[in-house]
Length: 345
Image (cartoon, rainbow, N blue to C red):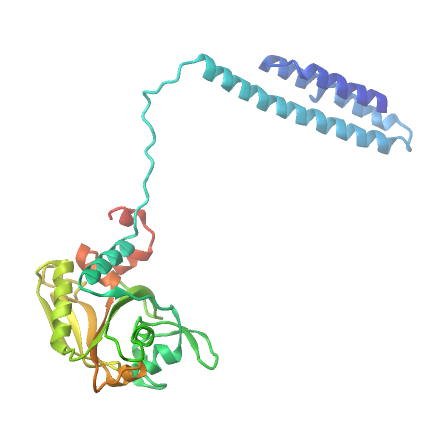
């Protein structure tokens, strides 16, 4: 029986090798591995073997079956490849068919907007200073004049990620970069500074058309001798005009623990052109940043003597800037990954 199976396998493989047409291949399949083929006939004889001969014969029969089926599948693939090669060599190639356009990548609108902001601030004499996204409670709050249990902490819904001695968190604003910039660039409070500090911020907030749990922010800091609130207003107004054109802006008083005095800045809503809409809450203006004169405590924590140095700071939401610039109605579009939105930029 073992000899019969071996001879069957060798004969089948020898007859398969020269076959290159479908009809002959099908005839080979029926003859050797079909339901009534030679292999099936040989396997029916296994029951007549002696009990001690059956294991070896059954094992070889299965091996022969697997070998022939694998050879059959390989021959099908080889015949298809040969037919394709012959077709390419014998038939002309039609080069008049239109090609498939390759889609080009592009900048995300948030990234493109950030680069535009960098350009404007660079032209106005500010350098980019990067700071970390993971901060300690001390740098994110305490050194910015927001001690533990201060009521202003309620304005920053914070993601705490480790409750160690320092309480580690995802920064809620880019303002802790002010402390790092003053300490790193100020040379012990002896040098003026003009920097912007861009980066992602995180807040545990209800997501809506106006608010997201993550957003880009651009912080600004200018420190020098005799810096005044008039310098702050003039600088921010110039930025708004370079970003939006000659549109009306307005300032009004506010409160931030790390600046005194403090102010919000609005720009006339481009979506409704000042007439009022849901985005601007029907006020005709959209808030783009908060600002103020750096608090003496913050200056002191950064290494500066507030009796000799003064400065102003501001923080603006980059997505909010883009919303106003491009008349986008919902901040959630930036992180929704909808190509219908992204391909417009």
